[in-house]
Amino acid sequence: MAHSYVLIHLREEDPSDELGALTADLEGTPYLVAFTGQSQAAEFVELRADLFGDDEVGGFIVDGETLLDYVADGHGLLLNADLKSMCRVDAELISDVLDELNLD
Image (cartoon, rainbow, N blue to C red; front, side):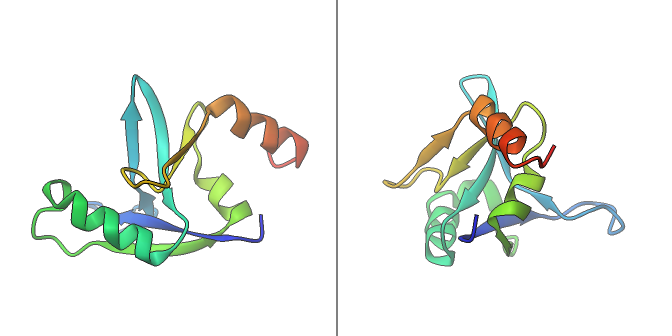
């Protein structure tokens, strides 16, 4: 929980919208995409330039508890997407952690 994570900011058409973060769908399962550091996030953006085009890509840093706030119901967590250190955390485990920490 004490570790910090980088989320990639998605620009919304309506500037009054809440800050959005990148999600992905793998094998029919939705995931929040997060990175364990700025260098990992930058490497992902370089690898997936096709997703972002010429747009400036922003990000923001959150702590572990705040990261869990961004994980929507039924979503897993995808750490360091498309990198050698990629790790999937299933939605069931996220739910168990939220329950254990009383963070529903």
